[in-house]
Every structure is written in structure tokens, then in C-alpha cells.
Length: 225
Image (cartoon, rainbow, N blue to C red):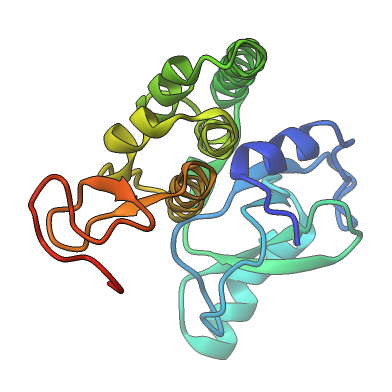
């Protein structure tokens, strides 16, 4: 199953035509889901949704009275739609501005364009580094926390293909703050060891030959360990 980052999901959604609210006919607004869920607590299912923020939309106008009459709460609903589908549902709001903080506005879109350019530039650098077997550049991008996750993930994969033993030391003890990147780094370190028939000493963690019986660094017996 292919993994998509939030950036990839957003890029795909931005290429789609925004749906129209089935209740008022207004164009719906792209909305980033908050870090908490509602209702059954199972989550939103998508990182982005389309939401109708038209304050004259019938379900929104009628919802205030319906929820107050039935549940004695001051709240209403807004129509929402899952991207790439025609599945429309309702989400609760508790004020007129409720949820507006997650609207993907022009500033967010501009930031997305900047991110796309950074990813494009990072991939271009990685492509050149791969051709020239420049593992130093690949490691630099991998360790740079300001690089987009997609670039770091690609660098983590690439270092396993072109990295020499010297590439292991700076990345094996680093923590990348992303489980997928971390897993790919661990896989690449293992791949480099396999290519050079090496392993880590179980006592001092220095790199030794896979078939070594005594660690040349700490002098411990590593046969069968």
C-alpha cells in the first residue's frame, strides 16, 4: 500500500474542482481537519475536507433551532464533503466562526506552492547526487530538518543504494521525528552493512566485519554474537 504524505494529498485535492453544496449551491471551501475528532472518536478519515461556510445555507440556519430543541445545546451543522467523492455529511459547529481557523486560504496555498518548489529542488539535487554517487549530499539533505519530509524520505531510501560505510555513522544515531523516515533509514543502514559485509559490534557499536571474531575497536569476543 503506497503511503501519501499530507503534502501529496493536498496537491492532489488542489487539482480537483471544488464541489457545490447540495443545499445552497455555493462552492465549498477546502478545510484542514483539526487534530481532534468528534462523534464516535474514530477520526475524520481524511486530512482535508470540503465544507460549506455559507451562513445562509439552510441546514446551518435551521440547525441552531433543531439542536437547541432536541439537545438543549447551542450548536448547528455545516455540510461537508469528502474529496473525490459525492459523499456529503454534516459536522457540528458551536459558533458562526467555528471551524474557520482550518480554512485553506490563499496564504496556505502560497505556502503549499513554496513547499512544492522546495520538494522539486530537493529531488533535483538528489537526482544529481545519485548519478554522481555523492552520498555526502544525500546525508546532508536527510539530516536537514528544514527539508520537506518527502525529500528526506527519498534521501533515506537513496542512501541505502549509494551510501558507503562512512555514511552510517552520522545517520544511525539520529532521530528524524518521523516514523516512516526513521524506518527507511534503519533499512538503509542494514542495506549498507549487507553490501560491505559488516555489522555493529554488540559491545562498543563500532563497525566491524560480519565474520569478525574479535572486535578490533574494543577487543571483545564477538564470535557468534
